[in-house]
Amino acid sequence: MKILILNAGSSSQKSCLYDISRDVLPDDPPEPIWEGMIDWTHQAGIAEIQVKTVAQEVTKTVPYTDRPPVVEQMLATMWQGETQVLSTPSEIEAVGHRVVHGGRKYHDSIRITSEVKAAIAQLSELAPVHNAANLEGIEAAEAILGEQVLQVAVFDTAFHAQMPDAAAIYPGAYDWIEKGIYRYGFHGTSHQYCAERAASLLGQDLQDLRLITCHLGNGASLAAIRNGRSIDTTMGFTPLDGLMMGTRSGAVDPSILIHLMRHEGYDADKLDHLLNKQAGLLGISGVSNDMRQIMKAIDAGNNRAKLAIDIYIHRLRAYIGSMLASLGGLDGLIFTAGVGENSPLIRAAACEAFAFLGLKLDEEKNAGRPRDQLISTPDSTVKVLVIHTQEDWTIARDCWKLSRLH
Ligand SMILES: Nc1ncnc2c1ncn2[C@@H]1O[C@H](COP(=O)(O)OP(=O)(O)O)[C@@H](O)[C@H]1O
Ligand SMILES: CC(=O)OP(=O)(O)O
Ligand SMILES: [Mg+2]
Image (cartoon, rainbow, N blue to C red):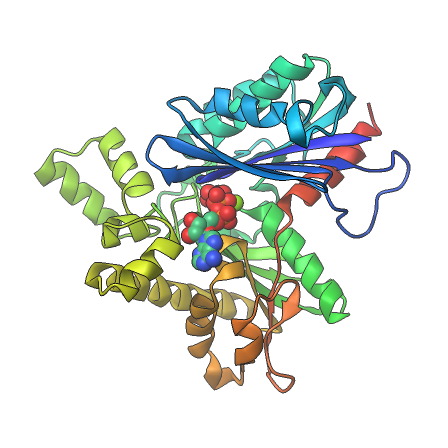
């Protein structure tokens, strides 16, 4: 059966089409028969579309003001033109969506109905960069495939739903708990996949491992995983908490917000825009949200870009330390997502702080292009791995399972 996956991130729209047996779910992720990616941050007002099939790879740039027409254009390359893999879109039997915020209500993957769509829309305020894009994807698929097609929402928050209260509850007012103001955590699909994949690569039972997964993409979060469960994470009520990110500040003293409101005329929307879209690597460097551009600027002698990286590394180390304390020890440290998979410098800088534990990186392996591979030395006390996150495959698995119930 053909399952389409739409994974809307803050800087990209990733999509892929799997063709898997209706009867047996493969253990390992199969190669998608089509992959589409839109990079929204390529250049202001210009999106880059990349489409890949077994036979073809096509890249083009298109100007845009609204995202949906670009998403529809990318999806159409499945049944039109040189990357065509379907004779008609109706061959797609199910569509799985990454939905970032599931709120209090949704812990498990679920068939999308009008009620679920309304809840995703309502939660947009808590994941302003994401839930709206997730909904656009759901509506694009509905427009192409009709309302009867099985669409499944897989929530970033689900994997963290069982976090212990001490990690999940903010030390604010007690009634925040009743109001749903607590730490949800995000990137759960990625943290879960990477933990399972790490156990399999290490040949160990996930139940026996204490792991820290570092999902470092445009958005970034860490998870502390024990017995295969998330027991702590760096993102909170929204995907703004925790680490410094591409355009997000991560955690800052809340008094700064009060100060800006009192003295600089900031209101909720202006603060939201500043902290979600104009802060982080972009805000400090003034160059870009993209780590590759930051590195280039550093090479060209840009001091603000250097400061941005220094803060990024400082915060990353501090939060790894925090996850380590929650776990009470560490068997494996995993790097994943755009920065985690592609930046030897960030991995080495993060690991350096934990050398005192006996963590030793194999410099050659780290500097290569590791993928689903150990990059620590054989005598390192902590295994360090780079894992290519496969959120899409995790979403496809849930979609396949739900398709059997319908
Ligand atoms: N070769 C690379 N070196 C360093 N950073 C990279 C590289 N390739 C991608 N990245 C970083 O990864 C980010 C995108 O990560 P990704 O996980 O795809 O993001 P998202 O899913 O949040 O859109 C880019 O903004 C860039 O900073
Ligand atoms: C939750 C989140 O921050 O997602 P992304 O990294 O895809 O922006
Ligand atoms: Mg992502």
